[in-house]
Length: 112
Image 1 (cartoon, rainbow, N blue to C red):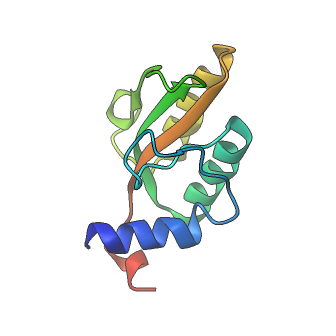
Image 2 (spheres, rainbow, N blue to C red; image 1 turned 30 degrees about the horizontal axis):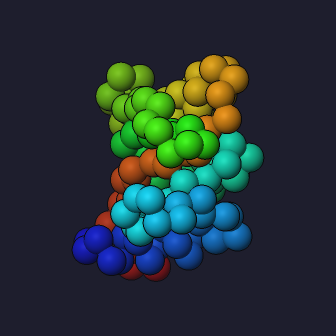
């Protein structure tokens, strides 16, 4: 799997219809989403059986807020309980955040 294949898959299957908040302040391949869009994104990730290695939100001034990694919660990045719990923990902070993630996409999905 190449990075281009993975990015194409994510754009067509995960990010479709969501608003990317990255206006050029980070690498173009890193997408940021509002809380409501990220909730939709997590549902799509779960439905497709892909995984998330980490969730990294930034505040509205584009300052790093923190990171949560799958191996602190689960042994598999595709375990939805870990990323849903981590997301809830970020939401509970009450901060207005922009969410990004790094993804595990199984090879067989890229062949679809």
